[in-house]
Image 1 (cartoon, helix red, strand yellow):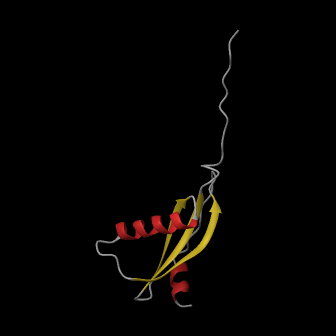
Image 2 (cartoon, rainbow, N blue to C red):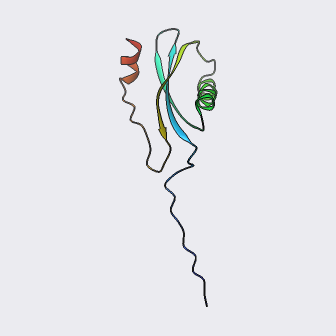
Length: 92
């Protein structure tokens, strides 16, 4: 008697993980978008700050951080970030 193992497909990355889209407004007025995967809001902001620091040799001063969107992470999750989205955000 042979036992057949079947793989179960799990569409979730982890039920406790979320995709966060955050915006960063620099003191000069320019806005950037950062997307991170995290378990909660605090971890998302911490991860975004680390990504911000890694992106620049000398990180510019930040005037404001904002949580734009939060989605449960699952297979196929994502965001569309248009090129002028940041420009529109900084003019508000």
